[in-house]
Amino acid sequence: MSDEAKQVAAKQEAVHWLLRTRAGDMDEIEWDAFTRWLEVSSDHAIFLDEAEAADDWTVENTANLSASLSELSESDAPQPEAANDNQMMRFLPLAGMVAAAVAIFALWPSAAPTATLITTQPGETQTVAVSDEIVMTLNGGSKVTLVEAETRVQIARGEVSFAINADEPSPLRVEVADLVLTDYGTIFNVVLNDASVSVAVAEGIVGINPENENVQVQAGEKVTKALDDGKLVRERVDSETVGTWSQGRLEFDNTPAQEAVAMLERSIGSRVTLAEVLKGETLTGTLIVSEDDSETVAQFAEFLGAQARPERVSGARTVWDVR
Image 1 (cartoon, helix red, strand yellow):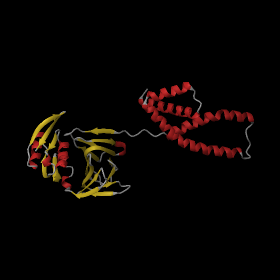
Image 2 (tube, one colour):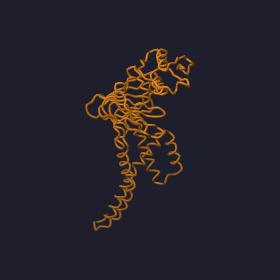
Image 3 (tube, helix red, strand yellow):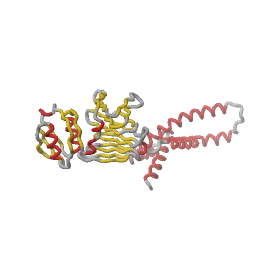
């Protein structure tokens, strides 16, 4: 039996058990069978919950049907003979169960669109086609879920750039933290870390929470939201530097040293620690990411007037100490 056939069978069983438990006359043997059925798969409880949700509609419409039957019985229309009444009453429970089952299957939620989880390791980038017009590139240490059928991307961590080749607003929907981003034909970059989420736009316009605040981020702008207080901060950026990490270039513009370290660590396979005295510094300039981490970290240290040395190995990653 195929997986699809098994799922259909399980949903039919869920309807059966819903109707039996609602009937209120199950004996101990049936309750044991019901319990075993639930224990077979965690999906069974989910199917039962969905069947119960769909049954809410059935109950409401059954009440309407009962009212209509009551009005009919009180009318002057000819009534069936007693024998026919008894026969009808004998089949009404079965007819009701069949009607309920049909209604539940009609209202059962359709299968959820396929979601694809995509992750990258530090120092690794990956380019993915969301659609024919939309391409996203993941920086190192990123995790996203792509629902291609809905042109929807959920960012769980890291940095992702988007390039849309369209003259009109695209159907792209990006969900990150508690923000929803919509595109108006653009190129933009999203960063999610432990403290904040930021959206920087190179071309076009990005809408933030269009159904609520409807904040629009123009080309050459960056909006950052702190995750602790929800405050939005807008600032100007050089649109030419947005997302240049995907081209192997890190652009620093009076960037706090700790933020610069995070940018660096996404682009290389190593970790970097800063001496306490350097954590309050800022960096300005362009850093070319080399295939050799030691060369890249050494250039980074020069921005701070410091030196880098390998301190230890953490798992498969080298830890560089900059001081």
